[in-house]
Amino acid sequence: MKRIHHTKLILILLFLMMGNSLKANVIIDSLKIRFALVEDEQERSKIAKLIGDNYYSINQDSIIAYYELAEKYANLSTTTFVDDIEILRGYGYYNTNLTNDYDKAIIYYEEAIHIAKTNNDKRNIALIQNDLGIIFWKKGIYEKAIEYHFMADKIAEDIDDADLRMRTLLSLGVIHNEALRNEEAKLYYEEALLLAKGVGHQRAIGVIQNNIGKVLEDMGDYTNSQKQFQKALITFQNMSDDYWKGLCYYNLGNNSFLQKEYKTAIDYYDTALTLNKILQDKDREVMILSGLAKTYEAIKEYKIAIQYALKGERLLKEFDTELHHSTLISILARCYQGQGNFEKSNIYYQKNFNSTNNIESENQEQVLAKMKAMYTNEKKNNLIDQLEIINKQELIKRQRATYIFRFTSLIFLFILALLGLLFYGLKLRQLNKYNALRSKLTYDLHDNIGSSLNQIKILSSKLNNNVSEIGEQNNLSKISRIKTISNDLISNMYDLIWSIDKDKESLEDLIDHMRDHASNVFSPMDLPFKMKINSNYRNKVIDAEVKNNIYAVYKEAINNVVKHTRPVLVYIYIDVLNNQLNLKVENDKSVTLDDQYSSKKGLLSMVQRAKSIGGKLNIKNETDKFIINLQVNV
Image 1 (tube, one colour):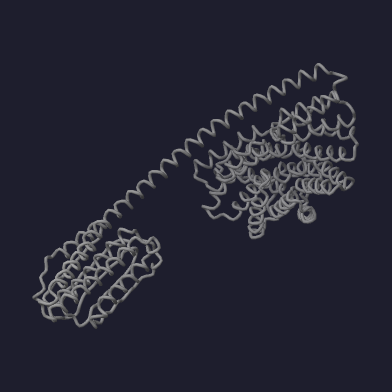
Image 2 (cartoon, one colour):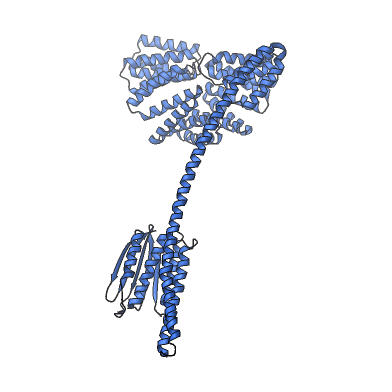
């Protein structure tokens, strides 16, 4: 068995004596024995840090003493940067939660985060960002606190660290609860609770249960919030964690206060205050004193309420925070008013007006008018001067608000005018577009319908003048020609009405009209045709110009098939894919009619129409077959 040196035995005895005097638990004693037995400076640094952590609910002086010891051995050894970060975070946590020296804590955290960033340690970066967020929240600088917590949560998501994510979600829940965004806070807490249970983090489970209770309380559900506080209290009692037990007792006190169970509230607050004497957390003490003050105020024990509120105010001057200040001076103002001491009441009302922006102007004026009436007999002239100052300040605020309103109104009117101009420009473009379409339709009416009517007029005149001179067969030919022209005229009129109908602008309307035209042309000729359609975009609205030009190309293609060939069967394919329409018209092997004159104007018109809408047209005019293929975006 290895012999233990006398110096080590002396260290063990000294540590055990210190442990007995401070009533240290078995864990601290075992850590002290380990510290005395090891010789490696790096290991000693780690154990000293652990001993300091375990002294949190026992003795503050011992915490800092062991942290300094950990730092000493860390400097003597070749410790890793992670050990240095742990020690710095320990100092930061101590100054945040026990001495409430937030500026000093920030210095430690900034040094720690510099080391973490230098070594690209994302987990520790996020942990320290979370720590800094808590400090700024305690200082009342919520914008900065939210910024740090969201940065930490982003890293936690990126590295997929459940424990780290749980911590950042918990912090975000606190911030949202503080901003009265309770539903969002509850969601953050519930997600954090699942992660805490997954990693088996008992302290975190208790903290989240406590915070869910706070959210439910803010939402007015006092019964369920009380159950959550009690669950959290049991969790911390099982862990012998006085720090969080104290917070649970405070929250139970506040819950009882809201339910007007004032005696129970005072008992809970007193228990929390007793536990805090061990911890010496000044921020916590102010919070509990505020709770006691408002409870004694509620039962009209103004003297006791004033004592607690003044004690809280004195403590607030010892550390940098704006939390609880407005609550305490409001209590003091109301309690002095309740005692009839209107001079002091007025002083604290004035402090409250200057320290918060949450009281509406109308309510301020009502309170000031009341104070003026009560204090007129004692310090009339002095109070009037003070009220005039406040009224001037209010006037300045209102004038500033008026200027802001006017400036905002001007900006709004400018934006409105700009939007009006944009709208007018769009309407003008649309009007020009419709005017162009109207002009085009006018030309079509003149060219197609005018020409057809003129032919009917000429044929009818000839038929009338020469009815006795010309044979019956010739007359029948002219009548047949008039019938054909009339049918074409009706068809053109129908097409014209369809082209300008605003209710016929969908792809399905175009396909239906194309089917009708094919049926009207081929059925009288006993010419069979097959129409195959592949489209999932039938309800798609297409531009009127595109629609009309597609139909014109299609109609001319059908006309060419009938005019220049005698097919056995005509195929029509329509396929719409990825907003592109493919139209194909072709006939099977047929006889070409050589006696039919072709000016090629129809083919040129098809090409021009396809080009005008950005389409591609391929035409194959073979000896026994006519094929057109149109591709265009719709």
